[in-house]
Image (cartoon, rainbow, N blue to C red; front, side, top):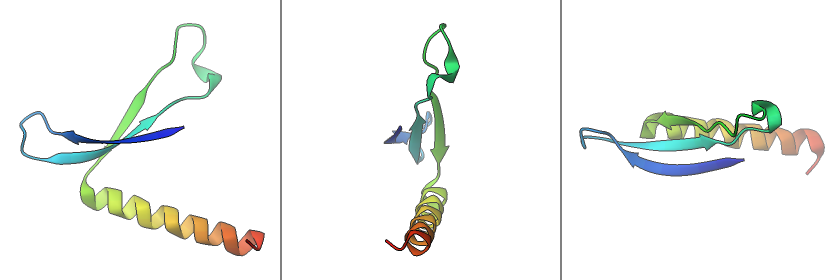
Length: 64
């Protein structure tokens, strides 16, 4: 599962696009680990472009 958020830096000078990663069952009995990847707007736009390229390739290969 993915969840997105916009987060302000601690010094209040910048904003980041945050991607929350929710793990599968690999964590074990100690609980659910939550990890975040914070991206600058440039990196977020690049990730969006890369994801759109992957979706287009999937559609091409699957005939969808």
